[in-house]
Length: 190
Image (cartoon, rainbow, N blue to C red; front, side, top):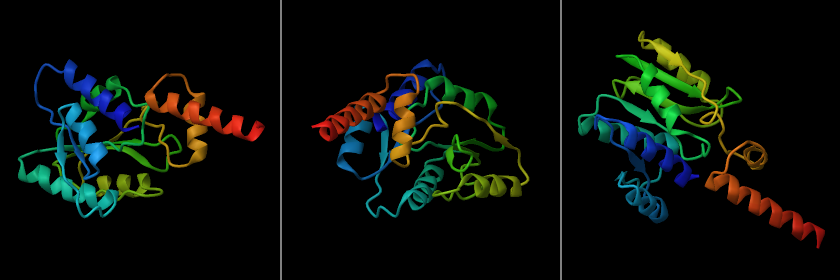
């Protein structure tokens, strides 16, 4: 899934004329950092590994210290993300405010843009969309909700893998999930 997400980000960067975006992953996992460096993305080390919310808080502070005026948080479990969807986000972001992309079930948040970068805290986990939306609205700044089909598909449980396989496409994640399901079925037949 990480490869699929980073590929979409890499393609998006390749099409942008201005070099106004920096992509960084937040992790201390050796595999993830190696993959990120393969795409020539920055790595924000996360040695404490406090979970997604803590990692985002820490990374937001790093971004502010580096002079970033905005952040776009994209999780690694949305393997159908497409580069055009990232461009759609940037087409719709407000000058000051936020943009949220909900998960397909409307419960989770699968992308969150904030300008300024720390406009409101992000708190991930089950049912994060409504609290994020409420926090964004409480700032008094515009909050845009954008539904994007690839970003809407996240993988949180085994049922999500079945959905991933059933959707059109041939991402690395879809191919692997399909192969694993096929192997599992053959084990049960034997």
